[in-house]
Image 1 (cartoon, protein in one colour):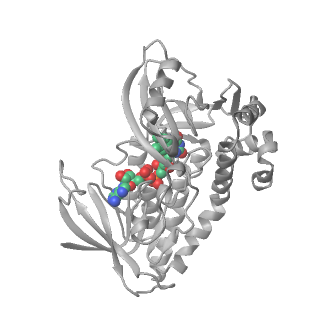
Image 2: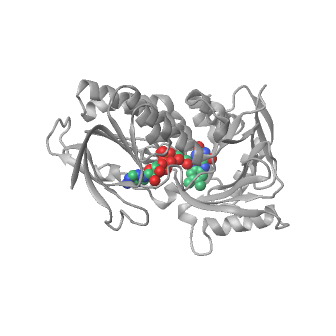
Image 3: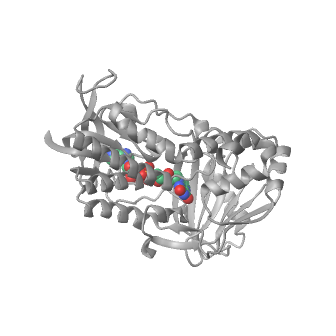
Length: 415
Ligand SMILES: Cc1cc2nc3c(=O)[nH]c(=O)nc-3n(C[C@H](O)[C@H](O)[C@H](O)COP(=O)(O)OP(=O)(O)OC[C@H]3O[C@@H](n4cnc5c(N)ncnc54)[C@H](O)[C@@H]3O)c2cc1C
């Protein structure tokens, strides 16, 4: 088996991994970013919507923006309509081209000095018993075993070349299916009720509101979830459905709901499906532990997704940035213990931990409402709101304000 050595190895080149790699490389760390797929950003598993908050982290390039939107419109089960618009700006958010966006972020990592390697899948952890462990455990993580494959070969099937990549720190950015955390003994399992299973078509040649991202609620449309129509530029839109993993079953899968939604919403059959995707969103709220000796977990791998909205892109970027800063410091100080890396955990919790926590509580309250209560919930949202700055936090704050009857205990956390 070939052997290699880096200071930091990042597993997974989604937004979390690429931003972590870029940030650590910019601060002088020797970084390898590995991605199992042949092309970064492909296959896309996302509705691609983000608020303008993105600009806090990345300079927006129109090359990877498909559409700017004025806000978000939410339709309740009884047809109530809640419109949120950013004040004084035509654009409150964007619908991205994730294929290009993810590649752009990986390119930035490469420009900062990280080595980027595709078709390379992590398949195990290098461990060293007792090395620098701050709290005992099964030993410090000291890198990954990986397989690099050629076209048409599968690392899963044990094909390709095995490589032992030693590293002082591993950043696990391997998405919702993350295995790296589990290999390190961190509890990452998701119950079916903690996952949304999603199906989406990119449909062209349809009529829809090109200025807003639209969300549709109702048990018949998407039990324990919602359907969406996000403008992708021109007459194309991402049309998708996410349902609770625990209600998915034979003839009741996300694709079944999606087909029904499309038939109902675009009945003339004029639209052409030009792409089809499926994927899962972790809705458990963040992991209790996102660090171990020699390891940090970021993005979907750490369950950094808002359980109320299903949005994860911005949290992945923020977590990646914090992780990159902390691991670069750890490299400089030659201290890779869990205790040292906990700075990462403290900082992401301070930055966005509360929003994710409130999102989880809101999701649980809403899923526990009877259909009459749910109707009242959406009734209270009916109307239009202009807000200074549109963000997920602002959206949640408005929902809580208008529904203090159901969410009163949460008001003090976000308002
Ligand atoms: C249908 C759907 C719609 C969504 N819509 C939105 C939305 O509109 N807005 C929003 O904010 N969020 C949305 N999300 C969530 C968002 O896509 C994720 O939160 C975000 O992509 C997380 O980024 P990440 O870098 O953590 O993980 P990912 O983007 O999943 O990247 C993980 C990467 O790791 C790679 N990888 C995995 N295992 C290995 C391994 N062993 N070795 C090497 N590489 C590996 C994968 O191939 C992948 O490239 C949606 C998700 C889904 C499924």
